[in-house]
Length: 351
Image (cartoon, rainbow, N blue to C red; front, top):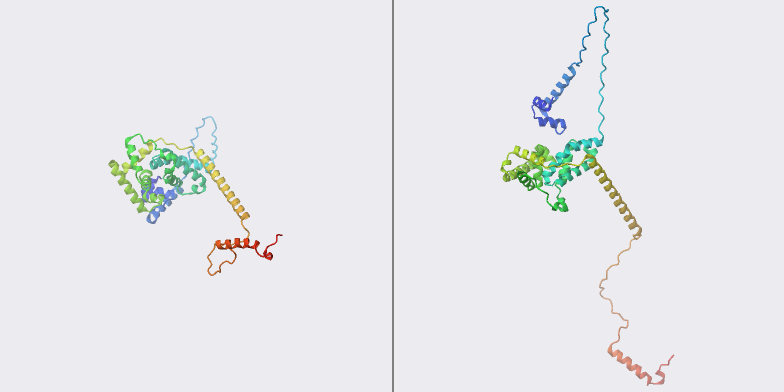
């Protein structure tokens, strides 16, 4: 049965059945009971249906002169065993995910940024990170959503404005209507632009859009309404959401944007991982060497610092002789002169 047939039997929409099968949501209440009854009914029908085999053709009648010989029973063909398909290698699974998601992600990133080179770089960087974290991405419920969120985060990073390449604007779309729509999108705040693209461009519902933008459902709804109002104010012909969705698809498909080959992305990811691993090892070695040098040259015991000088009150003045005053120098000269003409006993004797 198709998803539409299952949805009609259970009484839900096809999108709800798709989410149940992808594991995004779980049926609850009466829908869960109806879905379980349908699956049980399908299982019983598959078990009760007989195996259809081809009826062997009737043997040709033998000639009249020949004796009748009973036909030999043909051996029943042995049932072919169900040979499970070999599991995909991590590289094959990554290449399949890349081939499925990369072309559309490049176009979406172009609608987010208006820059072709940045769109390709964002998608390649997201898949490089996905290859480095492949054990985590491979078991994720929605690997495409994981890569899409990473590409959007990189594309909308505010640090790109400091890059020299970002200072030179790229050529706008050739069509005038496409240029007008792109100009409106680029004037929206990044959260509003991302919400509008996820809801009207990618086709996610409101809870999924809120979860991917890390916002509450009311906040995502408010952003979507404000973004639609801004687009309708500049381009009234796009006030209809269906028309806006169609124009977004046309604008994304008008640009010839190609992503790199999967082996190139995997090789770049491995090269980047090796570079950062070696850089981390070199930094760790330098840190260990600096620590060892510090421990080697540091003092072995504590040396208290020398305190700064302070003024002490109540100390008696110094008694040591200081410089002679003018009167003292005159007295010394007079004594030296009078000693020579004085009594003989006062004259000093030269040694």
